[in-house]
Amino acid sequence: MSFLDGLSRRGLIGLAALGSAGLFFGALFFQFVLGVQPCAMCYWQRWPHRIGIALGLVGLAIPKALLAWAGALNMAVSAGLAMYHTGVERHWWLGPSSCTSRGVDLLSSECGLLDPDCGTAIVLCDEIAWQMFGLSMANYNVIFSLVFMGLWIMAARRAA
Image (cartoon, rainbow, N blue to C red; front, side):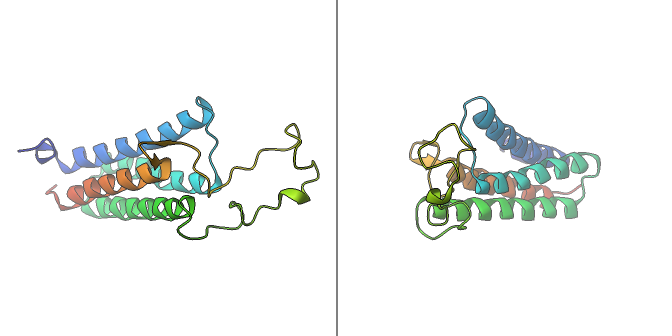
């Protein structure tokens, strides 16, 4: 018998929401404490975790299977966004022209290309800002989102 077998639907929902909270606040820690600036796609990936936290709070009060299925679908979207970002980072496919090196026109800046004191820095979506063991933050988001999706599915299938 594993630890998860002993958890109720409410417990599984809480664990999934706590995981999303950990990833969301971890991203904020990387941004504001460690100074790793996120790109536009990184911001996109935060939304499902915010929604997961909200669904988890509702699910703790009203642990319904339908809500847990919504949490699973939300984490599937999270994993999909992270997989898309992973492909853009690894140059497997093109990303949005608004945040990749193919779409940013550095020469048209009114500040000039080499003036570090003018304007805000452009964070490109197709460059890996941080990695550990060869995996980027987007890669870790895929893995954890799939794990959380599994928790939401277990919660949905668990008797109330």
